[in-house]
Image (tube, rainbow, N blue to C red):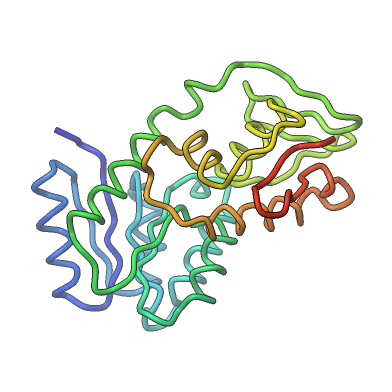
Length: 229
């Protein structure tokens, strides 16, 4: 049975109890919060293995919580699954751009939520264990898989886990074209429940951070993406 700690953040007690019941049955340890402020405090103290975070919260909303945690060195690697209401597509995209790992819309199936959480934690536990320790250099950009570090002209880039995994995967197969589905399977495991839109969002964020090197990631219309260097 799992012993990872999961923080559930929602201002609806019934939702918290529903999620808590299903996750406890899977062996997870549960923490709860009903406001963004409470969530940030608990994360600083307990450093959970994953957060289930409602976007619509009183006070500091879920997007602000995500932005804060992902910009903090001590908390940036904590996976976040966003809970969203229908019609919040723009917020979903923003959350993914900020570094959230996944989302699920209300009303949701507890079994689907548990499956998403299990997949993310399994991927986190591997923590690049299947990624060969090597260095890829393309002009003045260096991708160091052992250190999980990307530098351009000696300056380190602040990449999310998904951005690093995607960049390394494409660069390691320079010139090959991959569909969004193939990219998902490669960096998150087969059958991971994530939309193609999520991959597009990661690409957008990665290109922004690559700046003048954004052209390294080429869109192949009707197919997917490739690293052309």
